[in-house]
Amino acid sequence: MDLMGDPKESKFEKLFNHWTLLFLNFVIVILVEATGRLFMDTGLIHLIAILFIGLGVGRIFIHYEVYDQFLKPLIYGGVATLILFAVSHILEYAGYTFFYLPFETIAAIVVNFYLTGLFIITLSAFYFLKMLKKELVVYGYILPVGMVATLIATVLFYLKPTLVNLSHTSWLMYLYSGAVIGVTALGIYWLLRLKRHVSILVDFIDYFNAAFIMIATSAMFYVLSEPLERVGVEYMQVMYISHFIFYGALSLIFLSFVRLSHLGGVYSAIEEKNQPQGSTSARPN
Image (cartoon, rainbow, N blue to C red; front, side, top):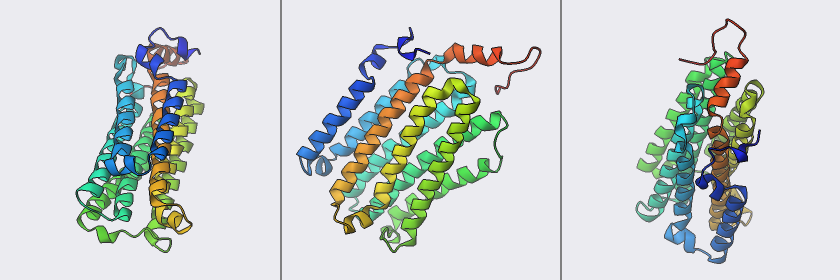
């Protein structure tokens, strides 16, 4: 399918294509590294993240009418996740500038938001598979509980920053590492199952899976900030690298929703065509 030739492709999509986003990410890395602490001290590192998030949200709502009801969980999950990421960067900057929270506490709070986003994406994939009767209902309870637990932990860490210890000897560091890896593995597994069952989503899932892995990698840099410092990686560089990976993930999310936005009626037509004569559609009402 030639997605790039779709007649509904907007000037917005043509402007922010693969090469533009690759070049933009490259320029950002060069500028940030060449100016030392400027982007960290001024908060520009977080502003860039919010601009990328705005790019993704803008992409989701262009041609919104082409999305059918079967895809809504993925769309709503994507919007909710991007909003959470924006909030995480605002709170990260506020934690440094206004609340004077310890670095480890801020890192844990950001990881909580990233984890919640990963939970949401995984839950969206679960909902899609549930419609196809491919998954266990128990996950519909476990994943929301995980989301609530991470958000509660965020509030607790703000109220009592000393609760956080991400040193290499801390159980919390290993808990976060396990949670990030576990949720990421589950999300990727389910997205790959979607890819097998709904072949028209192949392009979307390929991009989204790559973004999913990059978000998890960015979160792991926060989780492992103290051990990385122990082996000689400066904290500022840990944060910069995490943000660079995060920008790349947001770029891939943007490109993934470009693919999803072009399905529209074609998706519905193929789905109906694949239904046996006289059978009812598997799509939810």
